[in-house]
Length: 328
Ligand code: SF4
Ligand SMILES: [Zn+2]
Image (cartoon, rainbow, N blue to C red; front, side, top):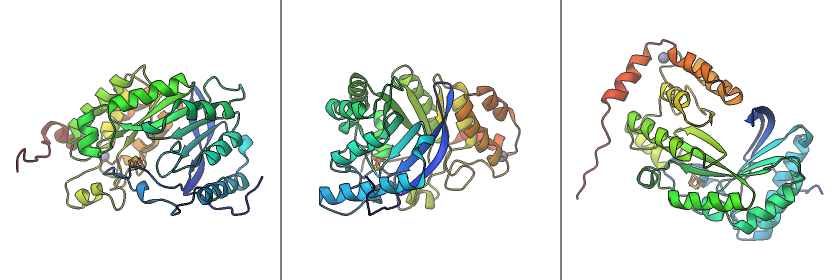
């Protein structure tokens, strides 16, 4: 069935993803949905993207129109993997009506779907139902619940991100997803607000160690400065600097699990960056690594020389933590 009201999603693009040692053709779709139920994370501007309606039927029609647009623009046979984002949580029934979740599962039957959601929306019945509609026996694990855990540290997730859930909430959701036959992908945020470069590196390293063996996929997102966020206002005052690409390389090289990374905005002042001279090669190298898993490439990039490398080393050694008064 082709909906008449075709509407372009927020974004939709083709790419490649590494999966179980192979490279798969992947379609990434960001649907405009009813909006994030939380909408309070300090670095996030997606929370402002929402379709304003109070009617569940209207929202479902609007989302169907976006899926119709995707079908009209892409030949779905070309893709083995579909990554789905909304402006919040795909499995939140108030944000993405169940009828539309079902339509998505039917449309992408036989493929691997990675759908992003907050942990409170991972329920056994929802995941089992979606997985059953999706599964035609091609893949052992056709569905992955992707959760923006950001860090395994509760104080950092609370104070520096304001994420509104705990590590225990995440592990409970991961257990439910696994029992329902789905895999789990964790998104980690590298260098949230208020952390020094060295603190951020240490936080990412301990998060990767804690997750090893507990989730099937880990993706590290080096923080970018998005518009109209609290993070942006600190950045404008000179109180935040996005992470160095050198740090990203050092984390990937030493990671106890395979971690993928797409340094969005790499080399730009709002994204992870070094000095401007070495950024392009490093960003491209990190993307290549995400497709091949070739850590030697990461080691070689880290051995590269650039005048900004000593600056990065100095920052790691001397930057001091953000000082907040303990009392008022
Ligand atoms: S990061 Fe996710 S949970 Fe947080 S406000 Fe943005 S969309 Fe909502
Ligand atoms: Zn440089």
